[in-house]
Image (cartoon, rainbow, N blue to C red; front, side):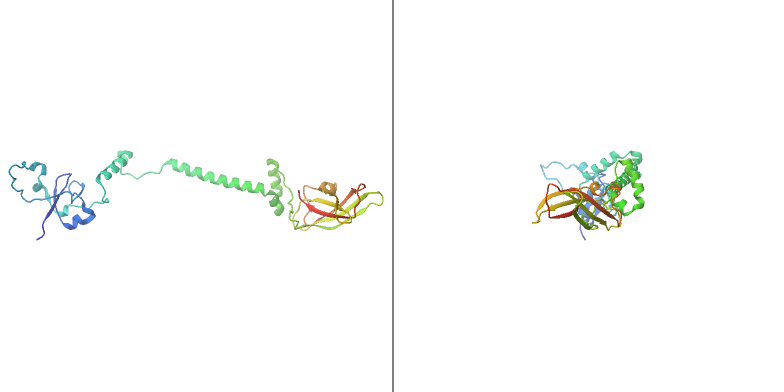
Length: 279
């Protein structure tokens, strides 16, 4: 017959008959079925064997300190496995006390209610996101307004009104790579009626389906060895004529006739070069 084992609850001094399997579970941690205290069943084991007669000279045994084990003996079924992990009971009590100190007594069993402040913050965040999205879109429209007006002419009047309020202007696009602008023909001849005066004629063609900004022209006069004699830059106002609308640019699939008079009385030249560029 296996030896019977007993353990005592330190909370209510109740003694339980236990089995080795119970003490092996959860490192010996058990819960008292009487006062619900959690304790170590191995550390609180007691013996119900009759005490031996004390040796002569030994201090008398204090039976009152051991409690009344025989009056409160309970079976092993009265012990319950605890629902908490095997950790020091003082930490569990301290944690429970800390939570209880923060929660009002009347609300200790109620579910936490969402605070109005969180809802207000959510609404503010939503408005902030919408505001920043609109702001980024407005900055993109402002930065690419020239390209938007060129590729979608229908929105150009609305962009023009917005620019009048913002203090900006809509300008024709520049063909920096000269993919659509070209000089179809050019010629430099001496004016027979005026000695030392040259006449530059050329045709600028825009092959793009949208308007392009007027470029600058660079005229270089060279000698017989193709060395530079003089170089001059001509702005759109110098060669486009008074009837050209420089703000609207060269029309789509349009062309511009160039005719400029050059005073070359102080130089002698044998050839020339003509280029387009944007400053």
